[in-house]
Length: 89
Image (cartoon, rainbow, N blue to C red; front, side, top):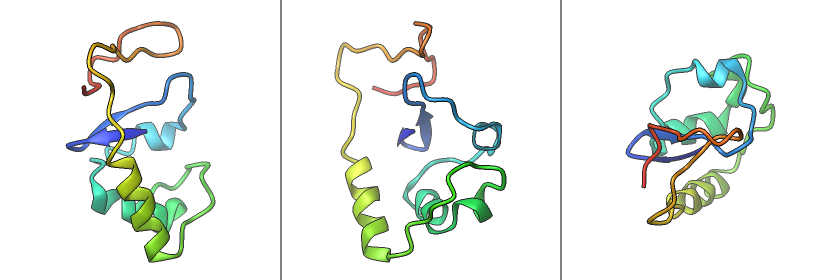
């Protein structure tokens, strides 16, 4: 899931767990840091059982994810071709 301004953008064709979808988390750097530190604690029921315990590694992952943007002119769609209305550009 990419995020900008707290708005989640699901990866095309990826099946997220109900726990993650229903979490209500606003994905900013702080929330992502908490999640990567202890995914099973932050979102019980997630299937991401592997934390990123090293602070430097977590911050590197977060920094990299913050550089990802949907290119201008691209309309995000889900795996069946439906537009994702809450995706950002």
